[in-house]
Length: 191
Image (tube, rainbow, N blue to C red; front, top):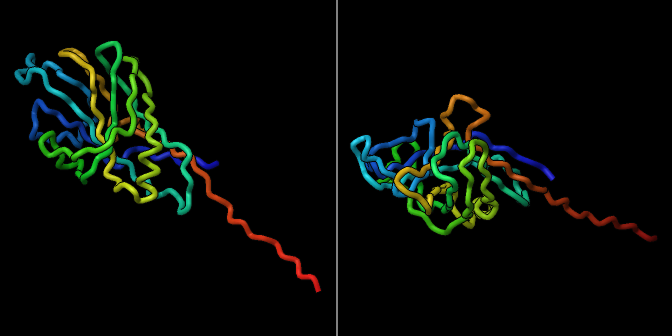
């Protein structure tokens, strides 16, 4: 069994409905919220924040059989007691430097859903199915978009992005895999 750790992500970006034509690709934080009240800063109210993220898995060796792929994001701040998060596969390309709420990638199937506590630290998401499909070529690797499905006007969570200053707290993907050993039969010639 071998392990490949990919850190940081290839690209990530906050997608903020409150300012739908603004790009946040260089921000050091990623947010997830639903129906958050931005009226106290003169915007909103009651809008959502999504996060788009993509990992480059091209360093996986040819023939690898992936047994697990865990995406980890470091939560620094959170309001609310728990958060219902879903990560959907992106079905179109996007660029960290230009993506906005209004130009966010289209999404398809839910890859993973989880309820996360409002505590600082690593949040793990099992995205094995997505990584297997990207690696096999069944899906194009356009990454994932995270959405929060429960919330209110004061409820959100905040993750570190790939631009965050402390490298060890940037998004990471840990892939566990094996390389099948080719069977070579031994023949003995009988004369």
